[in-house]
Image: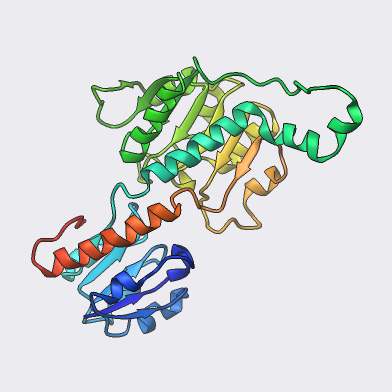
Amino acid sequence: MKITVLDAATLGADLDLSFLSELGEVTVYQSTAPDKVSENLGDCEVTVINKVKLGAYNLSTNTSLKLICIAATGYDNVDVEYCRSKGIGVCNVIGYSSDSVAQFTLASALSLATNLTPFCDHVFSGEYTRSGIHNCLTPVFHEVAGMTWGIVGLGNIGKAVARVASALGCRVIAHKRSPDPDYECVSMDDLCRRSDIISLHTPLNDGTRGIISRERIQLMKKNVILINAARGAVVDEDAVTDAVINEDIAGFASDVYSVEPLQPTSPFNRLLGKKNVILTPHMAWGSYESRVRCLKEICKNINAFFSGEPRNLL
């Protein structure tokens, strides 16, 4: 079996890909430019991708490909319908990064709620030493216990965040397409009105694109903390940027962007350096443990597919 990894660099240089070598002959590309996809696929039977986009435009000349393994849960970068029409299997990995993304979400919420950056700056700048005062309590911060944490999307990640939010003493409300009897599920507008912290963990689709709109931001509390750990396009990036600058929301964290990596034209460039903003390079999913789980699941997907008992098949 020939296996080709098209963008290994997105999986981390520390990840041992020898698991794949146990399954067949492996060719590894650290990255693959859009115009090199067909060439790099060659005559492989299986390809492992993370961010590379695949569809009719770059798969039509390949006649040997039988399986696409996505090293992620989201699969909006693959034309699944086209692959089905050509008999190409597409597998994703479910649940591997829940704890990793929940940890990022929690870290972002606590950092913003506690104003950690301004307090660290107070010490690092030498201002604390020069002040002669034993402590500094400005800017004011508040305990998250007792706050309402609104979660948009209650899949594996959303539920992991719900558990840690509850452990902190937050009241959890959620918005999802199908109500969950274990949680208080509310409308999107109601969630925006009531929440002190809002975290996004929903797939990107026609129903969620731009779900955090300028109009919904106007419904939010002025002290709300907004965290996007979903997909960049689930928020109106211009509207969120304006809301931060105009102090219509208290804090914002994002690990994802409508175009990645972050572009010079992104409105978020206006937020660089702000003490109440956390912008990270799409790393929330990628703890070492999470990436190892992902690779092991990919190996299981490959074995199952060629054994006639496919798992995680889209």
